[in-house]
Image (cartoon, rainbow, N blue to C red; front, side, top):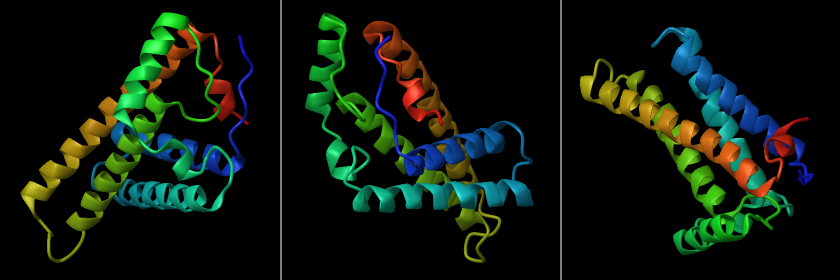
Length: 166
């Protein structure tokens, strides 16, 4: 298996903070409870820190290094299918789209959760439905992300997970 480059500590810390807290919120913590709320706030802070880091760093974690581009993503997936290789350091074009989808969903989910706690939206059933729907969509995106990492590892023999481990 090809040894991947390693993501920097900010990328790893924000990735795993968001991942662990989202899974805890989705499966473990009491919905609407104080721990659920604080986990959501920390997820939001984690994504914001990552976005700020992406504007400041010069590494492959820089946001401009993986702007979403559907045409490039399709070409990349065809190359992986045909040639069983991924020559990208950092996010490949398909992964870039998933990263932006996940960040958008996490921000929207956390923001809708925060909104439910404000005086203006307190007791708003429709916002609660939006929040739950966003959380469910995020879980679908997480499942696709994990499946894609596993599939890409099998197809390309590139150890994607190792790049996110300490």
